Image (cartoon, rainbow, N blue to C red; front, top):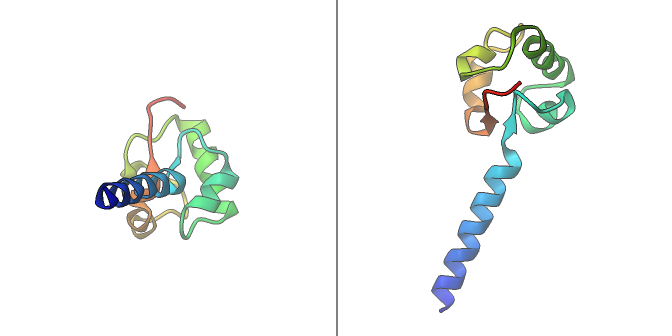
Length: 88
């Protein structure tokens, strides 16, 4: 019984921590993007929001590299923390 309880606790914690860290770059405000992604400050987060407003929703991680100041290395280190949906 202790093993099952421990396993459930670990799984719940894992799912919670992943959901807390992930940010939807198509819907989140700049403040949330800056807070959740490494190497993304306020100016870059605002550039992400501005780009999606002008060009529509991001569909892939590669789309983020079209934003000035966002390179492949930044996208790669945040790959597990970025969520998409097709809705702007």
